[in-house]
Image (cartoon, rainbow, N blue to C red; front, top):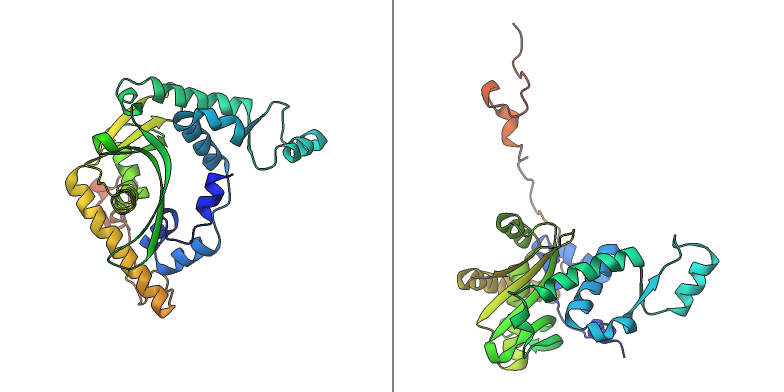
Length: 271
């Protein structure tokens, strides 16, 4: 039984495709019809989640290649023998093990393993749009009304990670997940946390809470995306980002005065 394959087979709206609607309906349709190809970042992310949240299942889902480059007859035979598993090199596994150990050892994180449930599949109907939705939560603790998500990042510096969270819509992702817990599990998380670990040694770890105001705004944004998606489905229209001619938005430095020119170039003409 492959839980992720079973999850992927559920015909419902998930965040990984819905977020593409932030760009345009065309982007969403493309993401839906042409799923993102597997790559090293995704494989390492899956390995991290497994080692932190479900370490006992790691051997079932991953294999370690220790024979150098991924090519040749031995590699082909190894791939065939481990069909269905994600194959990583020993050096790649070492990095993920370091990250996972850092998360599991961190004093801020350790209390959140008590009474926790991991990798839950949720299905529900969104009341506003009528669309069927799904989510696979990393981490919930019903007794403490907690929803947690695990992320790897370049830096846990507060401002740097905040920009990353905004860019990738982590707050909206977790608003979507919180709705799933509310409708599918019949309880509502009162606190929503992100456990972030840096990808490079020393694998520093930070725990970030999404405040109530940010979650409220994220709820509205997710609701709007779902309503838009319902409309695009009903009309079978999937436009791109712009429907009208746009003014070209030149960067501010184009018209900067000489003294304000960040690059130090002389933009004057003539004598």
